[in-house]
Amino acid sequence: RPADKRGGAWMADCLGKSEALEIDTPVAYLTCNGSPPVGDKPSLMTFREVETLFHETGHGLQHMLTRASVGDVAGINGVEWDAVELPSQFMENWCYDKPTVYGFAKHYETGEPLPEEMFEKLKQQKTFGAGMMSCRQLLFGVVDMELHSNYDPEGDETVFDVQRRMSNIYTPYANPLDEDRFLCGFSHIFAGGYSAGYYSYKWAEVMSADAFGAFEEVGLDNEDGVREVGRKFRDTVLSLGGGIAPMDVFTQFRGREPSPEALLRHNGLA
Image 1 (spheres, rainbow, N blue to C red):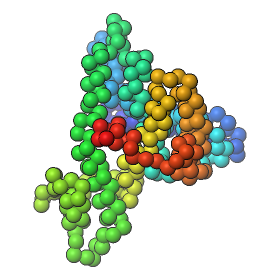
Image 2 (image 1 turned 90 degrees about the horizontal axis):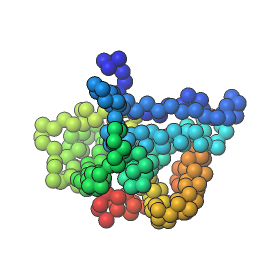
Image 3 (image 1 turned 30 degrees about the horizontal axis):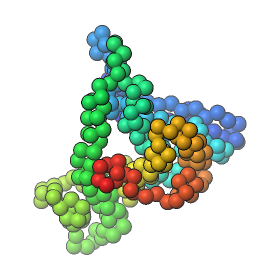
């Protein structure tokens, strides 16, 4: 059904944990829309598809490992919008961890492992243009917030004036042309559920990078240390659900509020 099949990737719940409904074992399913087989070759995953699988697995883990017994706040239910991507983006970090990648990155016919130089290129592409991409996301977030909090439709400024004013601050090297009408197609903030919430993309990156930083601090090759931090991550971020404020959940795991330092380091900016 290539013509009418929904694209993209998502995690959805088949059964959610609920004491009232006597459901104790939550069940999730992942839809990732991987590359189809070509000729005699089986379906082979691109690196982006591997990242997507890890991402959606993060959502699945939060759904399935929940300890909350009230259905409305069990798993990902009730988790505030700017924290729901924490487990999913956290999982993507393991796609750049060498032992993790080399546990599965093998040629499907010969079993030969991924060449070292190719793995290094994968790590390098992650930080290519990271500064400009960060500025772009910050611009989108602040334009969204400015339009939903300070913009006066009866005032002298148009929505495009707001876009240019914010662009002068965040992306002065790429100001929009006078004819630019990007905002007319920026459906995230008026038809996609991210009204006054686009900032959550970048905030979730801050939280997920800082969470992964806890594993880096004990040493990714320190199996005992990683296991201990992993249990703590499971017992907080992955299990407490939406009944506890995300900042409190993160603080229980990390011992402090999120810091952007890990994200800047992961992006090659610090």
